Image (cartoon, rainbow, N blue to C red):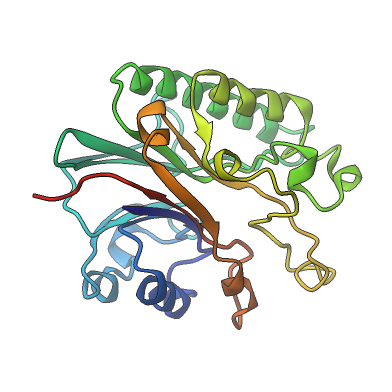
Length: 264
């Protein structure tokens, strides 16, 4: 089973790219972030025509997440617990049956948090605390569980082209990285780092200052997997080539292959 995550930076504006990528790579499950549309305006028909079940948690013009799956969902649930007043659409969970048991996939778009000296950074940190609490509960089930999405976290200096340029950025502040490490401390595994320690593997390149052409990137899109999923992890990849397409998203897809038995 191939599970992928991609911040598409507008599902409607990048629909041709999204469809091309789905046809080219055929992920079994795709977690999308920043769909930037409401549920009723998401372009589901051409995606469903490719054989995907589609569930969205949208928001007009901002944020928004979606789950696409070649398998039917047993259940889906929007919103991250812990703050009933949080109206931003940043989280969507889906459960898919395997031959034995289930796999639980959470698609997330973690807040950016910039500028750090505004209310945006405490919101980011609180969101990460809520994600931690959610993960604690999900790990108790001892089932394959995957957190996939745009975390807006640069985990380590090896995940950024120029660390010195990011020392005061919310994505790279010590508190941000510490909270990311706390998730790993629970027993979750950074899927990419489970298969390689290679540096300069990026998932985001800014539109400005020739960042793509200079490979001035950062790694902020991640798949964190439970021990039961890590045991079945086969390989991980980054579809870097889609960043070179015309009018691309500033993010590229990241995917992981798992040896899950999905036979009926």
